[in-house]
Length: 145
Image 1 (cartoon, helix red, strand yellow):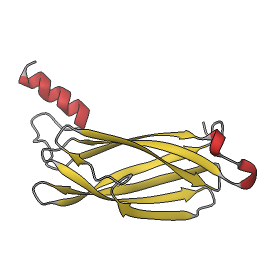
Image 2 (image 1 turned 90 degrees about the vertical axis):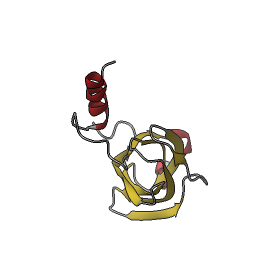
Image 3 (image 1 turned 30 degrees about the vertical axis):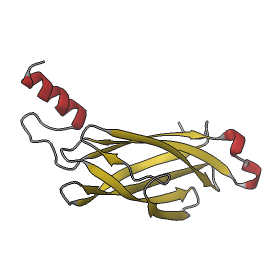
Image 4 (image 1 turned 135 degrees about the vertical axis):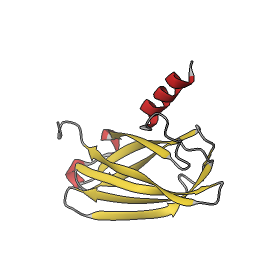
């Protein structure tokens, strides 16, 4: 593969413009969710959801995930804030190009809600930075189009 083609492929994957330097600190976060029918009790306002997070280091410097910060909002506007070290008891260390995947869950009092947040990272060059987690929806099937 030629350098020009490789640059265009990388640009398409990362949103980087051809000829532009790779960002030093860049963490990509992808999320998938599902409703857990067998663990939910709608008649008791108990709606269980699972989510799977994939974290990928698309920067030039290795980095460790130190802490997490979540804002979980239900359809009534109630917000629960969650802060803690690492994820599932781990503080994954990601080399450039390396990823880490984990699954967890959330329980809401409404059939629809949203989560968003960030991971605090420490790069090998000593820089601390936040990797934002864009808002995503938690919804019981059939409620949203």
